[in-house]
Every structure is written in structure tokens, then in C-alpha cells.
Image (cartoon, rainbow, N blue to C red):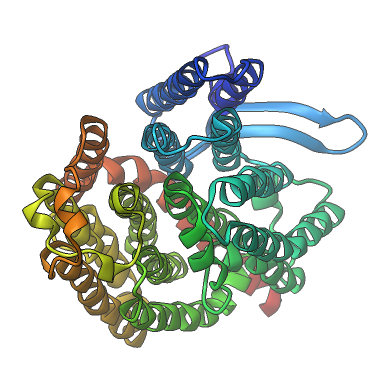
Amino acid sequence: MFDWPLISVTIFLPFLGASIILFIKEDEFSSANIKWAALFTSLGTFILSCFIWFIFDSSQNSYQLVEKYKWFSDFNFYYHVGVDGISLFMILLSTFLTPLCILASWKNIKIRIKEYMISFLLLETFMIGMFCSIDILLFYIFFEAVLIPMFLIIGIWGGERRVYSAFKFFLYTLLGSVLMLVAIISIYWITGTTDVIKLLDIRINQDYQYLLWLAFFSSFAVKLPMWPVHTWLPDAHVEAPTAGSVILAAILLKMAGYGFIRFSLGLFPVASDYFSSLIFSLSVIAIIYTSLVALMQEDMKKLIAYSSVAHMGFVTIGIFSITKQGLEGSIIQMISHGLISAALFLCVGVVYDRYHSRMISSYGGLVNFMPKYALVFMVFTLAALGLPGTSGFVGEFLVLVGIFKKNILVAVLASLGVIFAAAYMLWLYRRVIFGKIASAEIKTMPDLNKTEMYIFASLVFLIIFLGIYPQLLFNTLDVSINNLIENYEANIIFHSAQINN
């Protein structure tokens, strides 16, 4: 339809914006220009992603707006990008939240503003590039490149223990990905290509699938994160600036979920079927254990961080149920959790900017002095515990329906997570909003300003709209999910026939 490379423009527009900002001399007067340049760049990227959605044909089961260029002449490596129904919403989520993060950092970041905005724009380029990649080597490059700006965001603009948390985040996630790189090299050695579309047709020998699946799993499990390799997440969240926590919870955790869908199910179906019991076991433990840990937290950020681990447990259960309801539910759960967790961390950021404390015990009775804040916090709290009418309900309900078809015991145990979520989220809300006033300074805290209202209004609208009308997502997802399941089942039948012969 278009002769110009729409996907590449969307990927590299934030990189262009970062390059322009790099040459702006930072001083007292240019800081505002830097912020505006970053904001307009991110808004432009969001508009482009919306245009991609507008022209996207949801009736096609193939990748669209595909761009393919030879990368290394001596090897069979390509710059190969495009979108389908699954990757489209991940891109939209990334481009929607980035300008909100920039707005949320408008007054909070006071040092090295130029470097901060460059880091966020580079992060956006890497995130979009990763979701658009149709080549596993290109995917890996973008997948790991995300670590660099995120490491800087935590390590420079984070809290007191920012250096420790930044290094823990970097080392955990990097080491987890080393085996994935080895697996990608092995795939290239076995098949002669890293092109995802070609690999789906080649059907990797099942003798190799188990090892390759485990190698990819080692990376995705840490990134998601799954129990027991989740310990880096609470530390990273606690020390990261508010916008860093938003992107970390909303997007970076979803990279692994997307990887499971795109590569684990797509390329290694036999191994995915074989290891599904392992995934179910780890996911159920994550849901129950981290929910109980969340109940014991006194730090608001840590509570939300542990809740993220529990919610991502639903995602992995839905993915490996290999049912239409489970897969669609897992994707909607990722989108929903991206919006809700972003909103919750922004809520924490609002009171932290005013009182400089993340402790639950430091607050109480905010409904008397910050009624607008109490209202939006209530919406996000109810969405986090999966109240019908919010996007949180749709994802969790579909996941439970999907896994119920596959394993009733897992479905029953996973449903406990819904009860626990209600317990720790309502406990948090009661103490912060309705609890006893902890100090006289609480009484002087101002309510939400206009910028904060605009940010929260957009998130409230999307969370409720997608909860009431999820068909908007289904219309785009259906064909891609059906195609994924058909390919998965065809691969299983093919490999079963090989064994019988």
C-alpha cells in the first residue's frame, strides 16, 4: 500500500529525536526545549503507530507492512520487520505510555535532563524494534539493547540503592539471555536462516527443540519474571524513578510474554507441549507465593512489583494453555496490566513527589485532602483486582476459561490469585486513602494538578473502555491467534507422524 518504510520510520523516529536532543546545549533555558522535543517526538511516534493500526487489515493472517533488507552480505542475516495482530498492540502500548512517562517526569527530573530524555527515546526505539522484528537475531539485538537505557535510568536517576539495583537488573537479565544467543546461533547453524517465517516452514527437528526451548526459556523466564528468578524486579522497581518503574512494569515485562508466544510456541511447539506442566507449576507458585509476599509489604512500590509477578503468572498460564481463550486472554492481560501497573506506579509517584516516602504507614486519610487522587486510585485498585467492567477482568477471565479446558486443577489454584489480589490491593487502598492520618504534613498535600489529571484521565478511559468493549482487541487478534494455533497443531501432528514412521 505504501512505498515508504512506515515501520522503520516508526521504529527510528525516537532515535532521530534523541539525536537532535543530543546536539542541544543543556542549560537553564534549554531544558524546556529538550523536554518539548522529547514529548513531540514521542507523540509523533504514537500518531504513526495509530496510523499503522488504522491501515492494518485484521482479516489477513500474515505479517503486514513488511520491510526486508540484506544486513550482512556474507551471511543470511536480514533487517526484517513487520506487524501482525499480536505485535500491533504491544507497539501501541509502548508508544502510548512513552509520552505519559515524559510528562510524568516533567518536573521531577532536575539533573541531566538531556541524558534522561535521550535514554527514554532510545528505549522507545528498542522496544518498538523488538516487537516489529521478524528475524530472531534482530529480535535479540533489540531485546538486549533495551537493557542499556533502562540500566542508565535506574542507575542515574534512581533512589539511594540505585547502583546496586541497576547492576542486579542488568546482570540477571543479561546472563539469562546468554543461552538464548547460543540457541540463535545453533538455529542458524542447523537451518541456515534466522528468518522467523522461514523457520516456521522448516519445522525444527524435535530432537533439538527441547534444548532450544530451554535456552529461550532461560531468557524469557528472567525477563518476565517467573518464580524463582523474580528477585531483581522488586529492587529495580523500588529504586527506579517513577517513569522508569512505569516502563519496566508496563513494557519490559511484556517482552518476555511476547517472546513466549512468538518463538516458544511458534518455533518449538513439541517442546512447548512437553514443558507446559513446568510452566503451569511455576506460574501457580508465582501467583500464590508472590501474592502472599505482597500482603506483607510496607513499601507501596514493592507491593505493586510483587503483584506484577503474580499477574504475569496468569499470562504464562494463558499462553501455554494453547487455547484461543487462553492466548487472547494472555495478550489482553499483558495490555491491561501494562495500563494498570503504569497507573499504579504513577499514583505512587504522585504522593512520593509530595511527601518523599513510599511507606504505606507514612500516609492515611488522603481522601480528605486529595479527593481526585482518591477517586483515580480507586479505579486503578479495582482494575488491578479484576473488577468486571475493567480491562483487568477480561484478561484474567479468559485465561481461567482457557486453562479450565486444559487443566482444572491449575485453573482452581490460579483463581486463588484473584482473591489474593483483592486482599492486598484493598488493604493498600484502605490504609493509604482511609487510614489514620500519619502526620500533619499530609493535610497540606495538594491534589492532582492539570498534567496529572490528563495522564490519569487517559488511563482511566482506556481501562474502562477495554473492560466494556474488549471486542476492539478481539477483532484484530482473532486471525493472528487462529493462525498461531493452526500452525502449532500442524507442527504437533507433523512431528507425531515422524515418530510413528
